Length: 442
Image (cartoon, rainbow, N blue to C red; front, top):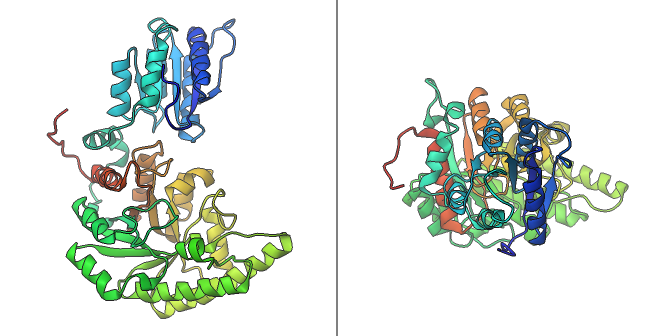
């Protein structure tokens, strides 16, 4: 038995009345491994229950990010797998041995393991759990095939084309404590790999505009036939304490000056400037926070005036509550820009943050269709799209429905490392717009 997988995991588990004994054995086994288990029931086999109810409950909790994966058990596992796979975004694999467990994880990126209590014994189930916990999705050639499972939902249709989108990836010329950046500190290689993987544009996270000269940046972009979509500015707050919500006026003024310099640099490339992490967070008692908010509001007005002068689009990005307490949702972002008197500032919506903060992601996209200026794609775990359980098929269909025409950038963690993460993101984007079957080896 594998005692530890090297990382904490949380598993959602459910069964019907027939699968209850095996479920209890699985729960005991997982807890012995120090895996956190959320058991949704049933807890007694006295009364028959309907397997679709528990399949949907587990599936929805997995999609909501309440667990890393799920396990469902009925008599044969067939009913549970059929029911779970009715939920968009779920990939439930029916497995009765370690080989099929390995294949469904490695090749199908399964997020729910289905088993049959009449087929798998409590004595044998530990070996299947070993494989489920230890096996990683391989990505690569499997990603395009995986996305074809969602093809009916994200078909571009007769009047849509790849050209209505610019696809990008987030890079940085310098190392940073901000995690979701690829090739941070090696911009030349990052741009080369971005071009190799079919991206149109790059988004640059800069600590200071002086990190790059206009000439050097233009040379890199030209050599690799890439555009610059936006400049992300959060490093100024993370590294230098220059934040719009800083507790001291010097920090606010520093952020305004730094944003002004970013705006000037962006103007040379027709790029946008992102106001995300540079907002920082409110601190202190309520009166302190009110003062910080007012100063941030005034600072935003100053930056918006500068952006208008230099003809640069500002983007405001809602960020999840675990990173900031200053603008978590699209509604809060729109309200703040309107209060500042600058509704021309557009929304940057990031799927990673939306997954945590928006009660209805698709409704939010539709509600603010005319305010959306930029999109970040990152999966539920902030890995490259396709490596978690975020419903990109539904989001893509909605972006097409609202006729979004703009940039979609992968802002992702370098997992397992930079090159593989970028390749995964590139393959994912290609799968959205290609129906050609590749003749790779199985």
